[in-house]
Image 1 (cartoon, rainbow, N blue to C red):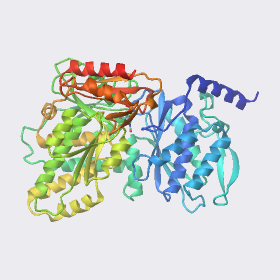
Image 2 (cartoon, protein in one colour):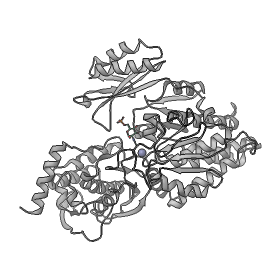
Image 3 (tube, protein in one colour):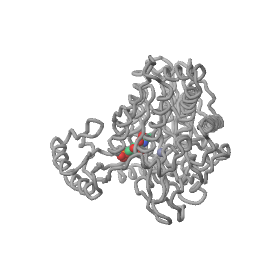
Image 4 (cartoon, protein in one colour):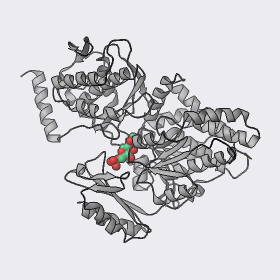
Length: 584
Ligand code: 16G
Ligand code: ZN
């Protein structure tokens, strides 16, 4: 038996035991890091092809599994806009990641290249920015380790362009997955280089939103280094602080902000930012030097468990705390309910969204009269998980609220339809987008507006457009915007929390034989299939005042999720549990 045969056999066994099929879910591919080697290689090829398809624009490839456990890892692609990979490429990503042998793998690529008319004539060069979070498996998944480069070239002709595509061919490509024994042989870097002329650029350890930001900035010919990122954040934050009216009063939130960095990449990045922001008192916890990534820490943990993360010790009431997730694209705020107690008041994505919406609305009200011809349209985008009380509050502000299915790509896509779009998931992922038209208009107003108040409002909005990440949700600049707005309002976290009171809610997981059997519509609020399930949910929900309940298949786990909301906690619990029984 050759080494290759042995390896093949062991991988088949492993794959069979684990029953794995990787799929490009709502957050890219995610799995145990030890089986991702071949997947990242293949997605490296996809990234280079995507860049060629987009006229040589820069594409991003990020190695991260966000809030998942440290042994997991994943890979996802950023499109030239800095947003998520275009959805019409996802089936191709699935197919090549799961191809069972080299031949079908290459055939899939050839067919796709032909179908998509991807130019392989060498006229354009593919460029891919690579980034990774702090997971130990990240480095080997990402780049070439110098000595183990035993490439076998092979060549086959593309009948479309009658030119040759060369692919570096490794034994492992045949396999759907590789075992850890072959760790250093294939990785994203090698995958990219399989496309002749493609250039991988390693950005090293970065947050997910930093990589998306860099991709967007490069394609717009803007300053795009990590240093530029930090400069832009600190300058625009400073600008917002300088524009606070009656500054110096004693009504501004005093005291430090304590940040849980989930023992991930956010820790070292926040440290850099902190050094640039000496007028903001930040204390960094769980920076990753001691604890384990995402273990009992981080935004996902805090939001789901509603307790203080590890590494905090006893806290005093009123201390402003925030928590980032493992790749720093999500954040929430919290304070303890009573001194030394573990229970918290949570300011989740819905509260952050409400604060942002209120501030933007206030500034627009200063800036715009009924007489103005141009009335920018503000859209607010939420998912079914948004607490009903937040939606009601936003409606009361006079804002248009629309719903999309769960997953950032759906919210972001919808968000591109307004002049100003504010989107957030309850879990803390979100951002504010500004249309090109609005930006042009605002730039004019900023300098020509008569009257100091209006000019300042225009300047504030301008600073927000610079501060907040236009590519994806970003915990670092989201955090700075919250801080700036609280200071602007002179609010404590508790004051912010009082904007509205969350309706009690409950989330449950249900193990189901086949989660794909549950099909939803109306932004996941209604079950379409199985046909009688929605009737049962409705019948149970009407029994509870302010009751609301939905069931959806998870996009990341092999389960169905149940969410219920009602006027009191007991009712929400009861509703969730009775609906779970129906789903089961
Ligand atoms: C992913 C999504 C997140 C979503 C979550 C839902 C991105 C970047 N992340 O983590 O937005 O809330 O999945 O998971 O899109 P679920 O489908 O298992 O409930
Ligand atoms: Zn994340």
